[in-house]
Image (cartoon, rainbow, N blue to C red; front, side):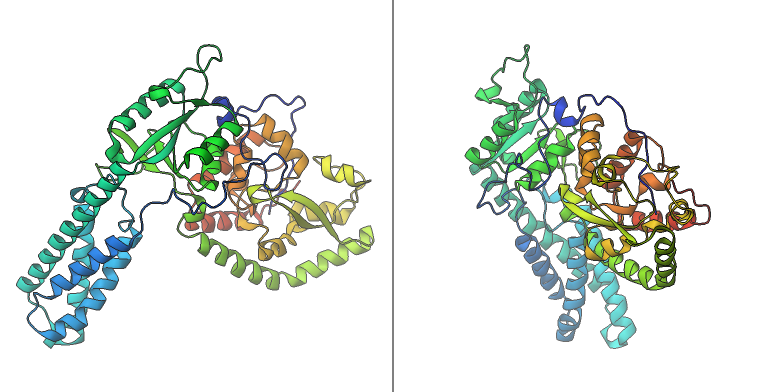
Length: 483
């Protein structure tokens, strides 16, 4: 478990966020705040890529065609379904059922061929092990595999060619985010090559020439305020946002609008050679809600939190009794914290100090060393046992086991003005522990460092990393530091 202490800068300065770098005010205030702009109504996520029906149909047709080269009828029935199941799982997991419109069939050939080979080899081995009569000879197996690869490539080539024709005929409105000069060059390339399916309608960036807005290529306006972006998204039915610079806050905003978000340049994952826009290497920025494993993260939270609550029940009762005897009534301390997407929730802790009033509880940063703290309260804080009731917050869904630590609204507002990217921490559910905490960033340590670790965790999240952080946190109990 963790604590919240750190040193608070005395003179908050301007917030040096990526949004500010682009000349914009903060664009994603917490949900429910008066200044927040609602996404346009009536949109059904137009930014998502084409459906998977056609690629799935191509896989099905390829398996059926490959099975037709087998001589006996029982092969068709007993092999088609297993091969089809394996192919669909492998291709779906690799993202081959939702290819970008600009990718060519030959770019996907190695991925398709390797997965088809695995599926047919597994099916042939399983059939031979089940019954020698179902064994497939090497020649027929190679013939079936060859037909499969040939058919799937031909069908997918037709599907992708059709999507490129549709993209050229009906390009999707897009906003380009970045410096005005670079954004105009990218927008000009997209306008000259409509086969990529983008029609830039505006630039989100910093005006040049001392604040005078120059017109971009083809008269594209340079948008510099939240209201201008909001209006542009509605009036032009913007479906895509292309980022030439890092701006996590804007990425979140456009994803909430239902736009597909793309990153040009920067760090790239390995991908097909054809995944580019006229030589500009790019990849889709996948929304957190679409990442694989987030459902499993919630299952892990519920299972482990429930087990931990049951196992820790005697400890919880002893802690509650110690607090009651030392500090009187009011065993639990309830405090408003900021969770995912800026939503407030009530965090639970064992009471270790009774504040003089609500203002002190909401605005006083660190109570370590306060003479009003009893021996029981000091022990609970040093061992982090005062955090155990937050397991109930995890079960309720207010928090996760692993994530950025939640903070009070007063300090969220202050740190968002001082530290770059602090508000971007709220893209992910807050947690009992996190990457920053297992690196020793607790107590009076740098908020800027914590913010950097939290955003790194979010950008590179995986379920296995959650497990590793939980194991490292458990190891900290043998040498508690508390606050």
